[in-house]
Image (cartoon, rainbow, N blue to C red; front, side):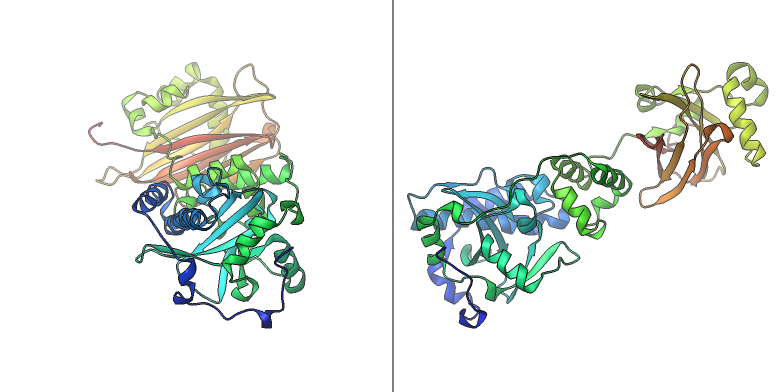
Length: 430
């Protein structure tokens, strides 16, 4: 290869912006428009880095056109233009220049250390023949090529330095590891054969226990993803699984964008003997008055639930209202009851939500059940029943008009049911 690793003492000093004069390229007005449009599709915590990276890609294309007019440049498949990936990976992977794959890493500061996402090196789908550092000076409307490294060089340095992934899913690489001569990059792209730099083979898509476990964890933290980076909530190993699974990448993007703000099941309507449209669409059935005398004739199955609750000193007041929904899966089914009653009639009323799981007629009851209840920030309740014939699985939570509760049920460790949030809205209804 034309550009082999060289001793660190033989590399030039860190450049400043003036020394990059020959590689500086003017950004065009349309470049800023494209980058801004992309950044608007990214959750706020990653938006600035994606904006800079997009400018770096567009500037690199302009730079290449000015110096290598015959070199084919293709960026349509670059990860940076896919918001779901850009949300997790502020680098432009899978750029094609001739037969070479490039990854562009962008910064707006020249430093002696660079934080680079580990995934661009360690996940085969993102690996590149060359990694190019792009310097962006937004105020000056200019970009510059400030260094590059081959995948082969990365492997060499990784073996000798034994790099560790930082908590934000990046490697910290010194500038001395990069060749600072952009002409050397052009020379490699013109004269080198792509197969001279061997890239890792893509991994086959496999749905295994690790992927399933991560999917379940993501369900639990989906609302935290709107305010926190994934690397603040997941391990590096989990990050590797995530970034290797396009379906999970799309799911995290939707969660971070707030797309999972599901419609509310308004239990306030139950107090007026009606179901809201969301509950109707999902197949909920309103229960009659929960006075014990009426329940025996209309809902005998619930009497078993009531009896089990009363044994544990859980008493449902006559003013309570509720609804139920049958949940089915391949091996059977069960019935989910949601009971609510108002605890205080103040301007900010408190209310009780009681969730109980029972059998449904003509369906095989799951052998095991797990019940979880969350609010917008944390898990409030989790409990499992290893033998459903031995008791009642239930949860109680207290909320006010501003609180929402999400319920999930796992049957026989295989079927997971996520219920849209329950909330109490009383304005103009009582």
